[in-house]
Image (tube, rainbow, N blue to C red; front, side, top):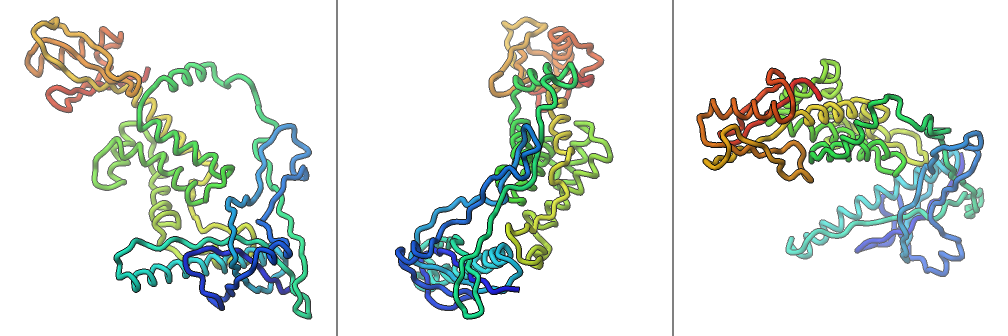
Length: 384
C-alpha cells in the first residue's frame, strides 16, 4: 500500500475552508494550479485492443464532461494499492463532500431567509491531480493512464442485404406508420441500446429499457396496477406466458431494485476503490435482452391492424357510406366514416361491410368494438 493525495477543484455558493468530511478545502491561486500542472482526467485511444480488427466500436472508460475554473481545491489523502484506486477513492470522498455541502447550503439558506427564497445551487468538483506521497511526506508525480477497453461489433457489417426477403418491405411500412406510442417506445429502446456508448448512466440505460415496454403497456390498458395492465396487453399483442413473466421480473427489478425506487443498500459502495467507479444498478434487463424489442415489434403488428373510426352522419351521404383518412401524417389508421343516420345495429353492419369492401378483407376476420355511439374500433384479426 502507498500513500496518495488527490486534488479536485471545487465550486459552489459557500466554500468554508478547513477539514470537512475527511477532505480539506483550501484556496489556491491560478498561478499555483498552473505550476502544479493541474488538468482534467484524460483518457486516450490506443490500438492495443483494436489492431486485429478491420472495423469496430471501442470506447474510453471515462470522458470528463466538465471544465471548472475555481480558486478553491478539495484535498483528500488515501492509502491505496495503485493510483487508479486512489483516484476512485478520492472521487467517492469528493462526492460525499459535495452532497453534504449541498445539504448544508440548503439549510443555511432556509435559516437565513426563512424559506423565502428558492433552493441553493449545487456543488461541483473536478479531479485535477493525483500525487504519490513519499516517506518524507513530499508530493511526487505519478503516472496513471486511462485507455480504451473492449471491442464491440468487430468486423461489421456481416452482410449488405437483409437476412429475410420480407424485411425491406417491413422497414418501408414501419417508416410510414405513424403512432405516437410506437415512436416513443422505439426511441426509449434505441437510447437504451446505445446508452453504454453514449456514456449514459447504468440507471438511465435500465430505465430507458423498461420505459420502452411500460409506455406500450400503459397505453393498452387503464387498469389500476401494472400487473393487471400487463395481463390485458399480453392478450392484445399476443405475448407468451414466458414473455409476460420476463416483463414482470423486469418490473420488479425496476421498482424494487436500485434503479429508480431503491429499497436496497448501495452495494458498490462496499467494493474496493477503483476507477471508473462501479454502479449500484441491479437490473436484469441490461443489454443484451430481446424482450423489449419483441414487445415493440408485437405492438407495431397489433396497431398496424387496428383502425379508429369516427362516424359522421348526414342525409346527403350515400347510405352505404364511405371512408376518408384523418391526420394521416401524424396518426396512421384513423378514419372517418360518412353515412346516413340509422340504428346502432345497422351502423355497425354498414361500417364492417364497407371496411371489408374498401380494404378487401373478409368480414369474418374483422372485430368491431364500440368506444361510443360515434366512435368504433375495428381490428383485423388476421395480421396483414
